Image 1 (tube, helix red, strand yellow):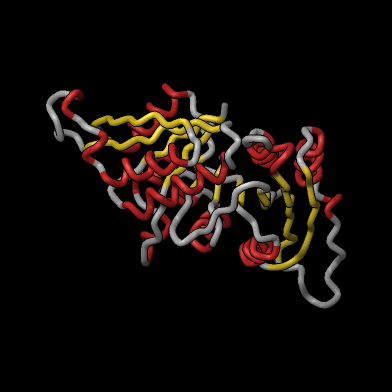
Image 2: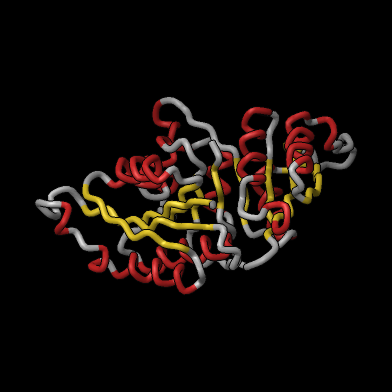
Length: 272
């Protein structure tokens, strides 16, 4: 069983997008169970028993939607700091993935995607998917774009995530992508997928586990090319390998991952 933690806030549209993503991931397979979590702010109730899930319309709507689509749901409330409660719950439930509803913000704060999302990204040891808004989801076969860089360990974590998705061998088609930075000019070197060990390792790992793979190497501006490939393939999601950084930059998770998160029309998973 593939276990997903779905932390929601009071934004009904955002919570429904999270629920739609999880339902599409299940694809009527019955292979997914979800924990819908709402965290009340500290001091909201003197005793945990006074906290009621059904007070939160967005949480109820998300849970009802999932159940109506055949997903086994646990409804859970906690109180405290939202990010810490999410991290604690994902460990208690031994969830495979956290599905969060991000938000884009203007100016410098755009990199934050919401402070709770940022904090979970930096603390969670599990993959985190951001659904955003105005995204479409398809049931059945899933087209997943997996952009890799030259870091083989990071690429391996991306491959492990994709191979571990529900019914991956039956339902997932992965495009393993390497973008040669800025090499889209006349006379640029030929783009050879086989030159990039991390990309080859990723493709072979997935193929060895029965996942259908397309190997793609192109040149150009990295973010733009990733988004173009995702749109051309009608991708259901993009699976990125993020990185944590020190100081103020730690929120960025790698500039390419940040840019994709803020620009993509597809859900984006950061595997870490």
